Length: 207
Ligand SMILES: Nc1ncnc2c1ncn2[C@@H]1O[C@H](COP(=O)(O)OP(=O)(O)O)[C@@H](O)[C@H]1O
Ligand SMILES: [Mg+2]
Image 1 (cartoon, protein in one colour):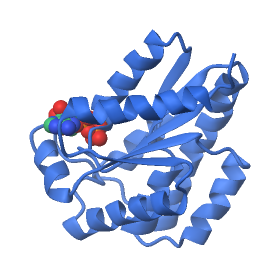
Image 2 (spheres, rainbow, N blue to C red):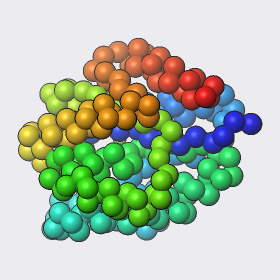
Image 3 (cartoon, rainbow, N blue to C red):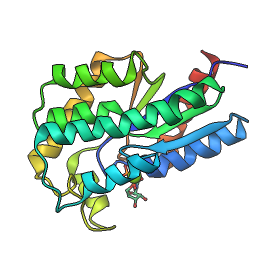
């Protein structure tokens, strides 16, 4: 049996993470790979409470508090779900992970990357995704998709330039970590996007 893999999905809200997560679920199920699916912030009982606070438009928090809450949720997820699952040979797929903190709190809000990296080291101790799928879309596309669904959360209601910086930070991180990232143009046809995701998953199975 090959080593259990850790996969993360990243991208702006409306990029298609949830849509393609369902595809990844079907793909891995068909491949007979035992997989745990989770999301950030959240994924554990405490993490989901923190998620509620973090996304609540009435929450007021300083930048550092917001960043620390993200990592508090992540600590709980890493130690109670991600590490034990991987150790038991189960793959883990997460809707967002630490790249999102670099993108939103770092790129979007201006927390220096070095500070985020300290918390990353503290919480992950070297644990990194084996594959990060970045679903990249221009802002007009993500916002048009979002406006059709529910009310915007505390991040979604940020201004356009915030989301532009988030997108650019995601792309910069992908460029800096080409071995881990697969960047997919997520504007177009869902089938074409899913073919690219399937190819990335197949490579991961072989690796
Ligand atoms: N490639 C695509 N083409 C057209 N619509 C899409 C595409 N990908 C996602 N959508 C739609 O956009 C909306 C947001 O997608 P979703 O998967 O919820 O994004 P995310 O989880 O990244 O916020 C959904 O209504 C979804 O059906
Ligand atoms: Mg989603």
